[in-house]
Structure formats: C-alpha cells, structure tokens
Image (cartoon, rainbow, N blue to C red; front, side):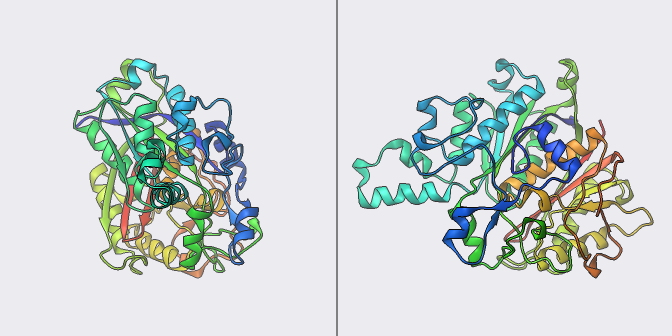
Length: 418
C-alpha cells in the first residue's frame, strides 16, 4: 500500500491561531483557558472555557460576526456559515499555504476532504425555531443550511472547490480521529493523492452547557486549576472550540513536488467498548484494542512508541480507563512518555482528534514532547505510566495520539519521523 505523510498543518485554537503560535504555546506550557463571562452569567456551576481569541459571534446574524481579515470569505459565502466553519476556513487556508498547494492541487478529483464536527447547536436551534414560528416560506435557504448537522462539510467543500472524496464524520470526541484514519486509508489504497482532514467546533453556551448538565465539566474558576488530567484532584474537563487541519498526502506525490514533511502516518486502529452510552469501560479494554490494532497496522512493537498524547480529559472515569489501557499494552521495560495537552487547550470534542494529531506532528518534527500541565498531586493510579510533568526536549521517533468518545468509540493514530 502507498505510504502517507503529513505535509501541512493549520490551527485556530485557544492556544494560538497559527502553527507557529501553537508551537510556541506548547513549548512554553501556555494555557488558553480563561473565564468566559457569558458562560459564568448563564449558570452557577461552570465558568471556564478554552476561548478562541480574535473571533466574536454575538448573534446568529453573520453580519455581526468579527474575525481576522486574513480569513477570506465573501458575503455570499458567509451567509451559509456557522461559527466553527469560519474557524475551519482559517485553519484550511493556513494548511494549504503550509503544504505549498496551488489551487490546481486543491480543487482536483485527486484531492478530498474528511471533516468532523457536532454541528452548530445554536444555529440548528435558530433554524428550527424559524421554521416552526415563522413558517417554511419565510425561512431562507441559507438559514436551513446553517441548521444542518453537516454544515461544516457543505461549506468547506464549496468554499475550496473540493472535487474528490468528501464526508462529514460524527462519532463524538473520536470524530476527527476517525476522519484522519479513514482519510489515510483512501491514500493508502491509491484512491486519493491528497486528503484534507478537518476537526472544528463552536465555543458557545449551546456547545458547553449540555456537558455541565452531565456533570462532566470542572467547576473551578481559576484556569491554573483546570483542567488537570491525571491529577488526583481533577474534577472534569473544560470545553474549547476552534479548528485544526492536516494535509495528508501520498508520500511519492509529496516527494515529487518537493513538499516538506512533518511526519509519516504509519498506522491507526479503532475499537469500541460495547459498554455504556456515556461512561467508558473502566478496564480500558476498548482503547487497549484500538492501540493494539494501530501497532499491528504500523507493524510496530509497543516498545517503539516514544510519546503518547493521551485523550485524558480530566474526568476521573476517563483518565482511569485510559491509564488501564496503557498499562495493558505497554508492559515492557521501555514505556512511552505520556501527556495530555488538553490541560493547555481544553477539550475540543469532535475537534480533539485532529488538534492533537497536529500536536503530535509538531512534536515529531520540532523535537520535543509537551508537558501534561497543572498537575499538583499525581494520581497514584499513574504508577507505571510515565506522565510528563515537565516538557521533554527530546524528539519522539514515533508518537501516538489517543481519542475516545461517548458510546465507547476509541481511535489510536501513529506518527513517525519521515
């Protein structure tokens, strides 16, 4: 099968709106989480969010929105946009430029796009409200499009003239990791030369408060105390939004055009818990199978993995299940270093897989392993797992990114030095 490499990255995130800024934040351990005033005003439990700076979406009227001038959107294109699609356009633009792709390589049957989001809850609500209260005849077509769960997919394929394979994925917090693995397979089989992989989410009350109802979010008001994966006193995750884009490319195609390579996608695996609608299997057996499947796909022993970007969201059940999975798979003398960058970024939900895959590519290319920040008292359950409480200035030859979602979806992605 064809080899697959990553040739471009783009970020709109709580820790920076460019590859260079995200890299600097990761190296410095700079956190993007802060008190979100409208969130604090709307409830008495949750106050923190991984806010995306430089963007404002004060209403459902796109003409009220503000975002960086560098994001190229006409008024016509903006009419069908949802907030996370604006994030995604910015991340796509950066990834295309980073990969050195000219328009002819973007809009061709050999180039496709797989993306992931949960849809824009606020815009879905507004569209349905319009249809029910004003009637179908007085509800515009753009409003209907913004109310579709796959609005991200519709907008990106049109905005960038995508002519190859295109699909929107929805598997909760494993969504964009599933998108990346599936995109990798298309290139391996020779069905596409280039695939864009995009994860994106809104960051607003409608996206955050449902998780507060599930008692999954931290109630801290100090960003220095939340989220703190693997800490004995962790109390839940913090939601973030934004977008991340990776350019996956056939290795020979990339070499022929002289593209710069971040890392090779050497394998991926998936498995399900078959346990509960929300809670993970405490044994971590589903994630352990996903990791084992990824290692088999990459033809690697567990000892080959140098670094793991853990899914760890800072919930008690989730972190413990992942620790059990890691202890099941990595049993030899050489075990990987582990961190959760969600302590810095927040949890991007459907965005998380793509964001953290991009972080792994930066780690491999730039020669470091990011810290698992904010840990004050390491959970005793971490014994036998090498949690990075400080940044490690050592290049991982092979890095893994784990993702898990509601319903027991698990994905492991492996990236190697090219």
